[in-house]
Amino acid sequence: MVADDKRVIIRIKNVSKSYGEMQVLKNINLDITNGEVLVILGPSGSGKSTLLRTINGLEEIDGGEVFINDELYNSNKIAELSGKKRAEVGMVFQQFNLYPHLTVMENVTLALRKVKKKSKKDAVEIAAPILKKVGLESKVNSYPRELSGGEQQRVAIARSLAMQPKVMLFDEPTSSLDIELINEVLGTLIQLSKDGMTMIVVTHELSFARRVASRVAFLDKGELIEVGKPHDVIIHPQMERTKMFMNKIYNEKSSLHSIKKRGSINIGIGYYAPPMCYTENGEDIIGFDADLSRLIAERLDVSLNFVRLRNEDRINYLLTGRIDACISKLNHTKSRDHIIDYSVSYLKNCKKVLMYKDSICSLDELAAKKIAYVVGTSTAEEIETCLYNHGYNRPSFVAFEDNDKAYEAMISGAVAGYAGDEIIMNYYRNNHKTDAELMYHPDICCHSYFAVGVAENDSEWLNELNNILIDIYNSGDYEKLFRKWFSTKDKKFLVPLEKWFG
Ligand code: ADP
Ligand code: MG
Image 1: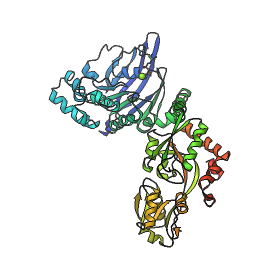
Image 2: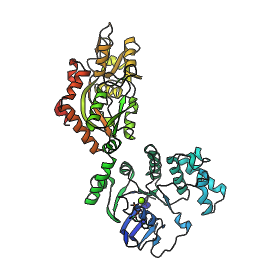
Image 3: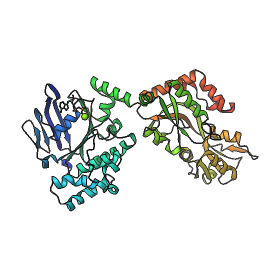
Image 4: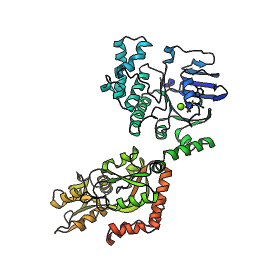
């Protein structure tokens, strides 16, 4: 079987196609091997859909040949393919084209019965596991109108798969879906590729292309301009036309583009972590992060929507585009590095353990105690690493919903210490005084920085954001903000200017 691995499944040889005077495909040559996922990118009207239609024999061609599994599948001599043969190539379109009067199961089994002449029972036996695979086993008796766009598209994929095609073609399968439904359909495609299906996908989802494609092809005005590894074609294209296209689509995909189009910015901010962000008596959101957000929106000249987030939702909201930026005491940590990008840092931070004076002496003792931390933060992970580096075990961390509860637990003695951000814990020490004396454990200090989180690979937006932050610094607004929210004792948390330039 291994020898089969690099077998060419789709061979496109010198394919040309014109509509009247206009040549839409110009001498296309491309081989796709077993299990490959080829993503086709290209501007509207460049011939992507026409190419897919010539591959599955829906379109006559003027010159050249298409072979599937070494069998001639399309050429200028093949008048029409039988339905049975066409079934070897499955195709999924932007529009799902489901029959509205048929249930999910009926939609998926229709071609099996009409083209493959299966009995109803046999057809259902084939379709059921496929519907399960695309996550629709509970929807078999629903009608298309009762399904979301993402579910309808997965029915269309199941309908194609039921014909047991050798290759699958997808023509912008997520273009008509809302942003939150795109991922579920892309998830199905990722699963298919893991199962070894050979696929050609026309899509503008660059992150999908970068993650899943074996190769990316760029088509422009009917010409195949560049084919290669995703990273090479998308990030480091060789040809001028490819470079121009990638720049344009990155700009359009940029949050900066949508912020300006909307006239508003969506900023993810935490629930309760004074003095960074909090509310009092149901008033407006206040705090350093809230004011920084306001300064950024002002400089962008757009209105500001706060999206209140639990700590554990911050990254997810960025990844799914529900927020343009996360300004929520977000620590720059290694584990987050490869999924999001950060602005320049705006505050130094230090993770410490607050406790009653001299209550925990050695690190050994600390490792044996119950320590409070706030759920969804990187605190436990950072402190664990710090202890590990000194050769000690992880204490038993107890998660609390917010800083108030973690602080209270320490004061009441329910836990021996409260691990968190020093700049936030200082606020508690100043504002919630107790009779007893508190201190930070002298041997624990994990340095990190607070920065604005943005989605990965959006250099357009990240550059603009950094320019704005640097302007906020240079204009003196940063220092005003600092003095408003922190005491002079906290001066050490100011980030020096050189740090702002990365
Ligand atoms: P893409 O999918 O890249 O947007 P298409 O393959 O749909 O591009 O179209 C390529 C070119 O062929 C376009 O200029 C389009 O207007 C033209 N075209 C597509 N289908 C037809 C058709 N049936 N008759 C005439 N022109 C067509
Ligand atoms: Mg198209």
